[in-house]
Length: 472
Ligand code: ATP
Ligand code: MG
Image (cartoon, rainbow, N blue to C red; front, side, top):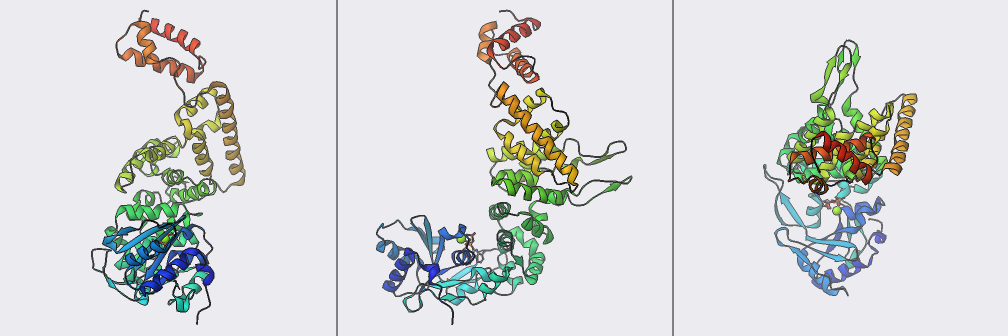
C-alpha cells in the first residue's frame, strides 16, 4: 500500500540492523527525525538515527555492535531502556516500542512495552511519526499512520491526536512545535496553535534547560522571528523573556512617538541571522534593547529618551542568564559586552575622531568586528535614504578603525609600561599611585597625546610622576 522508500535506508548500517533483528527474531524500524529530515532533504538530521524495535532495544544494539566489523562500544542508558552506538559519524540510538500514560505534574510518563502503532501514537507531530521498516518481509516500506507525508508537503505542524491533550501531557512539545515551524518554515495548524495558547502556562513544569535548548534552535534558524512571533502570540514568551514583551507597543506624548522596540528587535535578530551563525551574537541582538523599557522617559525638549539603556541592559543580561539557568561564563560576558557597547559606533558615525576610535578599539578588543556587525544589523529604518546613510556612516567607521589599527595597534592593547617597572623606577611598594600612573599612560595613548610606544610612554611617566611628587 505504501511506495518503496528503500533509498532512505540504503546506508550500510540499516543492513546490519536488519540482520541483527532477524537474528533476535524481532521487528525494527527507523523512526522520527531521521525519516523526516531525509524526505525534507535536510542534512542536519541525517547523522542522528533513531531505531525502534518491538522488544528490547538494548539487546538489539548489542547484537548490531557484535555484527559490525568495528565492534563499536554500546552505551547503555538503563533508566530509559535505550542504548547508543557510533558508526562512522552516525549516532544510532535503539529503543523498544512503548506506550505512555501521563500524570498532571510531570512531563515524564509511565511507560510500558507497546506496539509500533502505540509508539507512533505517542510521537509529538505527524511529521515526526514516520517509520520505515527494516524487516526482511517489507524492508524499506514507509509506515505513516497520520499522513505525515502530506503534512510535510503542505508544510504543516500537526499533532497525531488531540492537540489539547498532546501539549498538556508534555508541554515541551509547545516549544518543539514552534521550533520546528521556525526551522522548517512550516505553519502550525490552527487547532494546535489554539491548544498551545490554552496550555501556555503549563510550560512551568518544563526545566529551563530544555526551554533554552529549544530557544537556541529557534535563534539558530534562518529566520528566528518566525519562532519569536509565535512564542509571543501563544503567550509563551511572556513566561520565558518578559523583558522582551515589555518592549512591545508605541507610546505617544505631545505628538511624539518612539518605535516599537519588540518588533524592531525581531528584525535585528533576523538581520543578524543573515550575516552570522554565532549563537551568542544572535542572543546579543535579541537582548540589545531590553534596557529601553526601564530607562524610558519623555523629555519636553529631547522627546523620548532611553539614557543608559545599554548599561542597564547589560546588567539585565546577567539576571536573564541566571534565571534561565544558562551558564554565567565568557559567553554571557560577551553578550553583555555587545549590549553595553551597542550604541558606541552609532555615536561615532556622526563625529569620528581618532581618539574615540582608539577608545572603541580598546574597549571592544577582539569583539569589535562582531560589534560592527551588530550595529549594521540594528539598522531597520524603512526610509531608504536613511538606510543608505547609516550604512555609509558605518563604512566610514570601519575604514577609520582599519586606519587607526594599522597605525596605533590598540587592539589587545598591552600598556608599554608595566606596574613592575613603575615600582622599580620610583622604588615603590604596591600603592595607589601605580594605578594612577598606569591609567594616565593609557589615557594619554588613547587620547593621542603620546604614541603607543615605550620611549614616549616612559617620558610621559616621568613627567606625570613629577606632578605626583614621586622621585626616582
Ligand atoms: P532534532 O534532532 O532536530 O531535535 P528530532 O525530531 O529528531 O529533531 P529528537 O529530540 O531527536 O527530535 O527526537 C526524536 C524523535 O522522538 C522525534 O522525531 C519524535 O518522534 C520523538 N520525540 C522527541 N521528543 C518528543 C516529545 N517531547 N514528545 C513526543 N515525541 C517526541
Ligand atoms: Mg533527532
